Amino acid sequence: MSAGLQGAGEHAPGESVAAPRELRPLKLGVVETLRLVRLSYRLPREHAQELQSRFGNAVMQKFFRVTFVNLYGADAHRLALVNEGQVFSNKRAWDQIIGRIFPNGLMLRDGDDHRYHRRLMQAGFKSHALQRYLLEIKPQVHAALAGWQTSAKAPLRTFPTFKQLTLDLAASIFLGMHLGDEATRLNRAFETAVAASMPKLPLAIPGTLLWRGIRARRSMCDYFRSLLPEKRAGDGTDMFSLLCKATDEDGNQYTDQEVIDHMIFLMMAAHDTTTSTLTSMTYVLARHPEWQERLHREVSALGTGRLRYSDLERMPETEWVMKEALRLYPPLSTLPKYSLKA
Image (cartoon, rainbow, N blue to C red):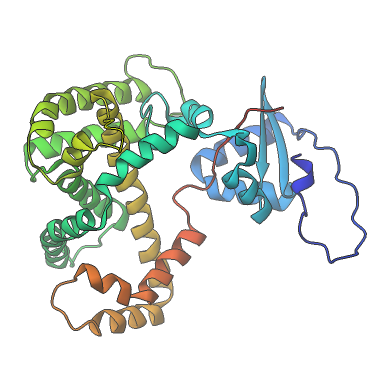
């Protein structure tokens, strides 16, 4: 099955097509194997690109008793994402990667279970909720921009700067927290957990990165659990409150632990991928100043002092830049799937 993906869809009608070759594991020396493993941690996108350029659109690797098949191209994307027959599992793949720090997040679920949790989660992503989020974050964004301009004499490192901003915004939108010592402690715990989500040493020995990450997750669980009664009983409009009260057509609600698992995962996913996207957009705009001018004209043409939710539909070129930055530098360079069939 995997071997048939290589070159699929690239032949003209009536053209003779060679039978797909049998896919066999790469046979590399120890030094080369270690180099590729190191590259996969340091530069995952470049690692994936090197495998494709050297070995084609279907690459098999074996590490001890585990077999990995790397698939590239539109046909591979269709196979994995459409997932006809439900032959691939997100949960079993992601559990092995980030499951000890972020178990039971929406991305770590399959089939009916995934659909059930996604349907309940829509309460936090409806149009009126998104409009409220925009109103809440605008003052924080303007304050951050003013601070960046004040410190403009010194070089501003984009990734850590965006990371701090998105963490603060996530605490505000998702939890209804205002900046302060409590938010700082929570953000620090999230940073520790994210750093430990893909450790080079997957052992929870005291002092290791994974050990610190598990402790950070435990503290976050305790914190969220302490807020659950207030969030379930109150009339808050933050994401935490909405998930606590989300109900489907059959009257089902998230359990306390499910709310906690989703909140921890959402906080991680929201700030991590957004930070990466903003950094990539800044990079591509720095390389193409003519597009800086185009986006400046587009935003200026809105004719409003403050961005409104309806203005987002009037910014197509900004959306183009974001999508191109995501295409060139995706926050996730791979989509891991676990095959349920040999």
